[in-house]
Image (spheres, rainbow, N blue to C red):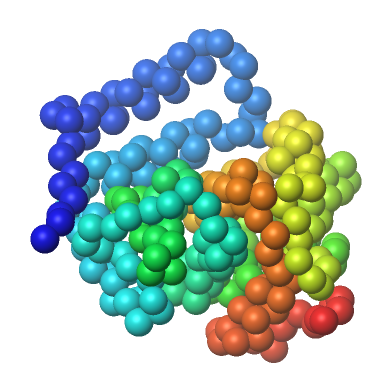
Length: 279
């Protein structure tokens, strides 16, 4: 029987606090960090995520949770596993794994490392590894986050602003340039989900567009993003980059609609978004 052992280098977990503080101190001295980055919030989340990744007892618990959630989905998530470099099925399933984690299960492995997805071509399954950074998300947050993804896909400016305020991305007091830039960033992220048919990630310029818009948002932002957004967008950027790297061609619109139509919203269900074509 093959097993995988994960052994932590002595002292790694104990040094996280001091290492993060040293980085924060260094960045403060350089005076290069824009106010809109909200360094204290980013460092707080970084400490928490790194501490979780070094807690192997927590990782073992997360593996059991994940196994309970998806063992019947044909995805192997514990034990020994093999992987191959590439597969069209693998490319599509990486995109699906993001939605399944945050929306369907509200529990997701948030590490963006591509090597955490090992596709076994002979068995046609994905082996998932490294659950130290896994976390859950509140139902209300996921409800509105899915609504906002849908609004971004449909270029619905009014809904994006409303949901961004409700989720805590905006205060409602932002300048017009901040509002416009925030909405434009939403349109860019929603681009793969905006039209029916396959979306070719190889033809994307999403990362460059977001980088350009991000510089403006850092100058004009009035509030840090909600804490949940750090890990979600960390993983989303990894999923996008993996799809770009693999040259994935994915029916993103159909995938979003499938998830959206089956999702059971909570108390704000009466505000279900219907703008834009759903075909």
